[in-house]
Image 1 (cartoon, rainbow, N blue to C red):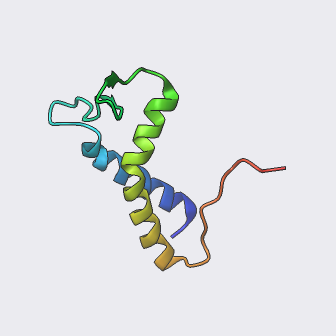
Image 2: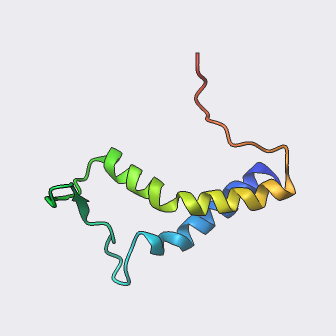
Length: 85
């Protein structure tokens, strides 16, 4: 399996697994945050907050897909496209 094949398969898998993020009416299942004092805070449209929620909820799907790919291509590694100095 080539990298582009993996990317394509992962994108399809994530699209199918959007049910993790949405209910049957396509509303977000995560509505906010609760602190230790039981105060409820709704989610803003801040992209950092939204992207973190998506990351946390879909990460198990990504790991499962990667594990299956790794069986076929053991030398393959996930790396960041940003190079550290």
